[in-house]
Length: 341
Ligand code: SAH
Image 1 (cartoon, rainbow, N blue to C red):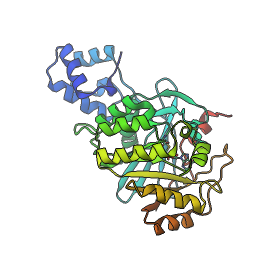
Image 2: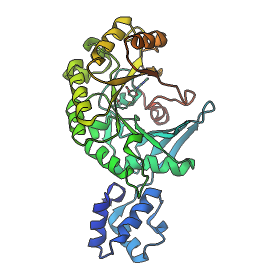
Image 3: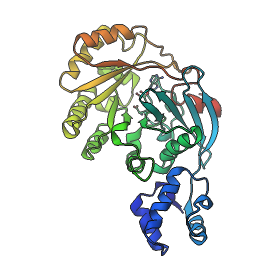
Image 4: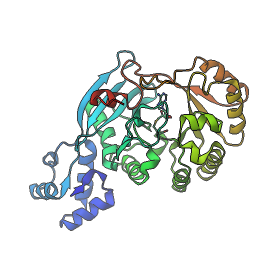
């Protein structure tokens, strides 16, 4: 069976040719798929015989809303989707002045083991297909009635650990006949898999790469992010510099502020020093308190910000949205499924 929503336009064209259909059918099917039809029968401008053939050969993924939480504070909506095999992933719709942003997941669970993150507590269950990542955008749009203008790949999972499917997703979501989100409106966040950052650079996409840094020194970064053990902060920054040189795109460094761990003045100074060679921008994130974790939110966000700014670093502090609805990734999935350590 073909998972049809993961098909590129050229693959759909091939499928239509195999079924003896004229080429324009590929575009029609593509448009229906990306509008979020719940069945092939809804594709009303296709001949019935073709719909039957598609049913025989293809799987149409239709995620179900397992839970939906709406923030009373800011209208943020969090969806927990149940996938065809029973697994669940989360997406979040955030309303900003510059438009609606959806945060999507790319894996069920995560392999990376970051100490502060709820998504990784149960390990990696499986990677999502391109169609399953795309479905989150399509069905958030359909379910909420809101047009999505921006995408952040900051949900559950590590995008660069699911490289091929994520690349395919980007191509699909960027298609003018589909959801049509421009690359400059997409951010991809990684824990820093250096080989894959190099591989991504080769594609020269205009998206924004966010690197989850969280500490400028190896001791602290390895403590927070086991993935750092193999790479190290020096090599990560070398890779980021190469990425900038190849793509011309500035990197955004994510830095979740943890009380007494990565919020010291010397760490701000070291971070400023490291950024001197690599044009980039720092996004400080007030840590979301994850119940299972002993790490607590920093009380020094402003001081840390000022210290960086005094040294010429561009810094923003992330606004917290949806803090009344289990805002940090992975929390809703864990709560609903009753996953316990
Ligand atoms: N795997 C990718 C993307 C998923 S997480 C990555 O590591 O970048 C998206 C962002 O949320 C990352 O920067 C991640 O480090 C951060 N994050 C995870 N748990 C958090 C928490 N409890 N508080 C604040 N930020 C958190």
